[in-house]
Length: 234
Length: 234
DNA sequence: AGCTAATATGTAACATGTTAGATGTTATTG
DNA sequence: CAATAACATCTAACATGTTACATATTAGCT
Picture 1: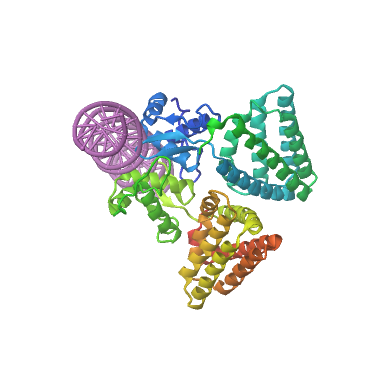
Picture 2: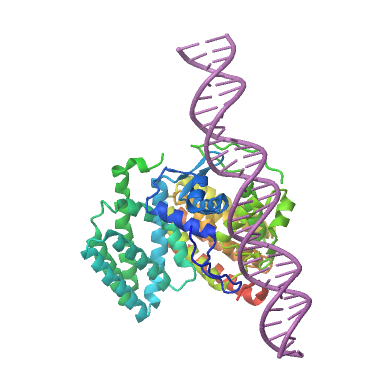
């Protein structure tokens, strides 16, 4: 594992964090969300440590964090596994997502500056490009970014991180759906409606379009169980 | 640290979790939220390990988790400190709390059974007793329990844990305010209004009373900075 | 004295050795 | 042959040794 020059951390002005455990965490999290590591698959800490060229300690630390996040399941003295999907957990995540993001967009619509709107529209332009060229992965990343930008626009420190963490379960399911997903054009339209409402400062319309958007996506997610039942627990 | 008989963990039916790191986590978290460990105070891992009769490993694991939760701050190669309060973080936590708990009470009011209502009213009766006998700590615990019960009544797996985690910052501030707090009677009235709305299945009224309740408390929290500025960062 | 560089110190981060418990397999017994 | 007990194996949990880095202190220089 080649780390990137080791950026310094200073006491008062805390910087990105470049510890090995953070790097391992990012790598594993990415691998899980992108389904490179499939739900139910065993994670052998020692092997991971070997592959990444670190000791077992940072790997364990990273996995503990992933367990808190609900992305892995640790069975003491037995093994660590990529968490299988659970419909009830996904339902809760979906609920939390709607609660947080509708509240966030309400604030965002109330207080958004023209610069913010421009950035949002910029993102939309890129989404159109990605949609035109059938670039699923690119579109997906821009989708996430748009939601993050709206969270940020609410102007609350740390809100994006909280929302993004609660979204990780849903992100994972969406990735698995990517291949089946044909909703890119519809999604784009919904995004456009959301941004338009923010630009118009139509607070209630922004909230309603966001709720509609997340709900529609939620319905998609539930279809995964019929398509890939082996990914689900219990 | 005397552990309680070591309850078994089985693969499919996962049980409470009795690892040392979980115990250390609970102990430290309690100590921080109850302000036994004051904001800004250093935590010496080795000392904690010694005091609890465990090695540094479970202590580090517990502290990592507390850091994720925002209750401690780890400065690499320097030290670990109980997180100082930050107005902006508290504001975000307050926002998240309103978003989650109003959404939760909406669902709870829609679907609450008569048994649930009875449990809530039972809690209220105990709150009245605690208020009569000026039992701040007891009242506070019942307050938390009431909010947890409402989360549970929404019928979403894991929602209570998420809400409770996001509330930890606020709980800490409330504890610090306990000695100044004279709002117990008013708080009780607000709780009664909330439960009454749920019992009546008046969804919108339940949501409104909950939002009002949390907002009023939020205003109290902000007064702490003028009373105890040394607890705050930046 | 004021500034900079060398050094000392303390801590988290990291590495690795050890233990205990969960589970699967094989032997043993009725 | 089935039930069960002994055992082997594997893994996370835990313990402890080592390293690197942030910071404070001191020494040396102008």
